[in-house]
Length: 200
Image (cartoon, rainbow, N blue to C red; front, side, top):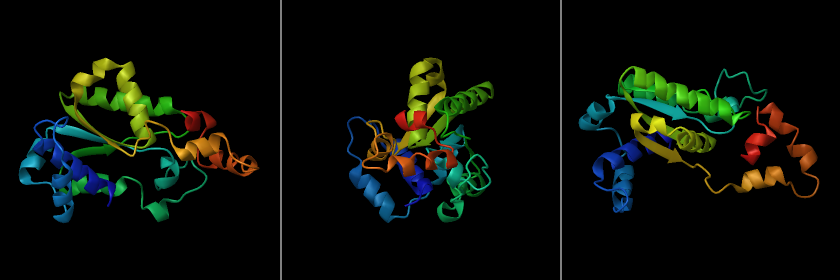
């Protein structure tokens, strides 16, 4: 399932649930998957009120075509990370959607992009929906903790695969077994990833 379909399902569930904290939405989620989820006209009307920002995670520089911060480009395999999602949201559904430029080298750059996007929407009198993936979700949640003034301008958030409790991959990169360190650590700069980001 693509990230856009997961986003559509998530937004549909948010709109259909009375209380996310008390409602088991598993059956609803499965029925939406089986029905090949798409936004309903009512959902589109609701979403048109918001700016949607997609916040990529680690490795985005290698997964987005034309991003020259990474020496290695694997976007032919991944098909331009979040690019298709933005195209569908803007062209098919005529929604305000934008993929933020994030950094795998410096998490603070990602947080500034998030802050600037929310502030730009606030100045236009619009609230935002934030769809974050992996490291993008970690940067987002910290930015919201550090800057609670942003909360009032947020209509919704979806975290996709954000490793709030860490990941086995980061553990492997921080403490490579055997002699893998001499092979793994030189690869990170080629992907515009810093050791600080892996530790983060």
